[in-house]
Length: 433
Image (cartoon, rainbow, N blue to C red; front, side):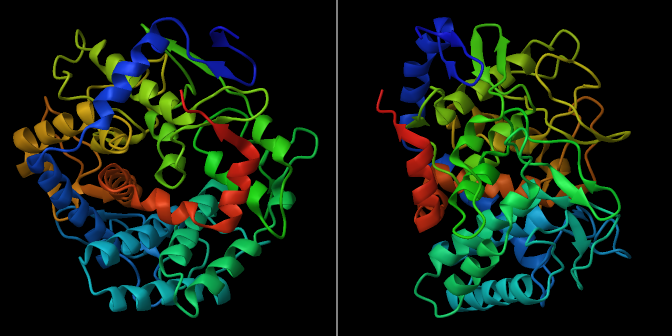
């Protein structure tokens, strides 16, 4: 294929292909000292969320907290997020490596979390519920058994297992938690794709991971499982849905976070699919980030606050409540609200446009939007509304993306896992172009 779209593959062509050499060159340089200092402050604040908002016994991390009082928005329910806990385990490894906390104290907390997950936390066939009570681990809000939230949790579990590889207990517990997950149970044999979840009252959710979104971590872990693996061909079952905006062409029409979450753990650099697909996922996320900024800039006639230094929209809170916005190809619901983690989550791809944008947000709006845990979830630069909440997954993707940019450490730790290495060997071939 000389360029264009295929059903299960995508080759960058035309203007997009011409852009990539320049984009790669921009991401190759080191951070200026002032930029690294800024990211150090942002990262330490993001880590503090996971240090202070995890239950001391279970290690489960609150879904969100108030920016003003540091208390939970739903304190009476005390709701934790499974995915948040996966980000939190990874955050602990970063903190130990950077000596933000005593590594021995961090090790004890990691051990306590893994013991809770292995022996106490409610699960079905190894899968965990999306939202749980932070103190007991019991399911709340009638939430689903979530494949993606379990995968994000496992990203943290396996990262901790590799970072603390010399420990007597942590690697064993990490393996046990991973090995218990029955990936085949949630695989649709007719389509070869994984269901998004399961409900105890309704059974398997009808929704499956049918398009390229944030689920690549889930499929990689399923293929790599030593106990309940899914076939390698499942990697090619979901659609690589093409997207075009102005001069940019890429795969994945979902919000920008869908191009970030799996990359927080999987090092996709210099990798492309084996077989039919020619997709280089890392380059794809570079193009998706530039396209997202261009999409925001195209709205300046309606929202003049958007600029090359102020952009970023992803599902978030707004003045009227939580809104799923930011999909490519639709302006639906967008009202000019800016979501800092939409930018911060792409630091590992495009620091040349993400660092200036984050620094601009900090310089212009820090008093209203930047506090103990870094940036709040969202704000409106015209009305000056700012979200009263921090949302944990925002802090998580910010911290992990910043760390991968600065050191590549999370990619390194997660990539050491033998089952991860095996799965990547089955899926990818080197892409040295």
